[in-house]
Amino acid sequence: MSRLLQSWTADMNRLSGRTVTIGFGPAMFDRVRGLADRRPAALRPLPSFPGEAIDARGSHGDLCAQVCASTPAAAADGLRVLINSGREFAGLRWRQIGYRDQDGTADPRNPFGFRDGTANLDVTSTAARERHLWVSDGPEWMHGGTYLVTRRIRLLLDTWDRTALDAQESMIGRTRDTNRRTGSGHARLASGARMLRRSYTYDGGVDVNGLQDSGLIFISFQRDPAQFVAVQEKLADVDGLNAFSQHVASGVFACPPMDTLLRGGPTV
Amino acid sequence: MSRLLQSWTADMNRLSGRTVTIGFGPAMFDRVRGLADRRPAALRPLPSFPGEAIDARGSHGDLCAQVCASTPAAAADGLRVLINSGREFAGLRWRQIGYRDQDGTADPRNPFGFRDGTANLDVTSTAARERHLWVSDGPEWMHGGTYLVTRRIRLLLDTWDRTALDAQESMIGRTRDTNRRTGSGHARLASGARMLRRSYTYDGGVDVNGLQDSGLIFISFQRDPAQFVAVQEKLADVDGLNAFSQHVASGVFACPPMDTLLRGGPTV
Picture (tube, rainbow over the protein chains, first blue to last red):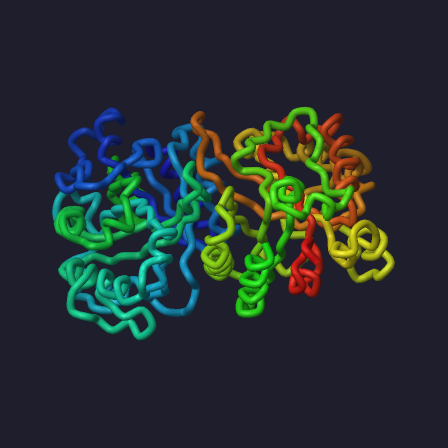
């Protein structure tokens, strides 16, 4: 573990123009000798939610590496550097490429055609970051870190694109063109969420029925995965968008700050 | 057919910032009534090549639409416009998203880390375009058009990345860092190719063995698909890169010029 982190943190310093986030999954703490008592109580497998169809092959994992860049080629190259330098220590379970509409806003349009992330956590607020984003309790190696939750959410675009705009707006809870809140719908249901959401679009081609396999790689950062769980339990129950979407992959990872990674992450 | 082309050509005029190429596959001319005698003799299914493992589900098709843009979101949105406006007339057989390293050159590095497209057809030369790219014989609806060949070529990156640079350079036939021809290898074998190549990188995640599923969406444009076939027959036989790559999907399409599309394409 410490040799892998030495390689990866050295890579991270070399990968200019890219942002790398490293996380540790709950199963790792049982698998790697000597780490069983280092697992934060907050880091547990996510519960099952109604309606989901999680494919374990594209989910979970002991480690995660998120590589962000301004072009797909730069992101893919950066990820490959990590895969190669980690090859001696870890195998590749899944990888998923995604993109965001680079329109210069913090809430670009998602594949449903609506702005996404408008009522996001205000990361310019120190109070908001400390209350909802950065960890300050539990084991010391996670202090100043955050928890990453990722869900691959397939969006049924072939159905969505044949749904009338007023029905779409009612389900989303915002107007499409002006992004005005309408008072109900998904936006209102999710409005209790105090976490930093940053989702990407994935394009998986076509399924066996000839339907587009596209959607969101939903990613949220929070000081406790329970923040995600509370919102998702509510959404899984009553969100009208459930008819147009399905969660198909899932992961939760503990992401310590860089200086802790440099000292060995959970082995500190 | 003509109503579909009316929709698509109207879309193409609206999709600013994107380049759309429409093509017709060989099977369409048997399937659509009244078109049997419109098929150009040059438009035939590609032959089988040694070593390929073509998955028909991601191959062939009656129609193809290639949408290019400077960002993945713009390309995906443009494709979706065509899918939606064609839904009444055609189903979706496959789609594949890809990207090119946007380094400002005509020969960006491909996933093998080497420049690709250096010895490409010189499209600034009228003589080269007329001799190798644009169709001037066969049925009149294809005059001024071109044939598109696409091959999804999986590259075995996990093996490639553990191969010594001098062996890589010998197989490619170019030096990696300076892009100098070394006199043999893939570059020399392919040097007889007189077609316009423009390939994209795809990222398909991980296969069941934990290996990266990435590679090239090879695309070439030529006045006769036989130009591609001649080169590929040679490469399939003796190219050292065959140990690091496999063709897994295939398609060939006749792409008439825009003014012919506006008048109904092959129905003209």
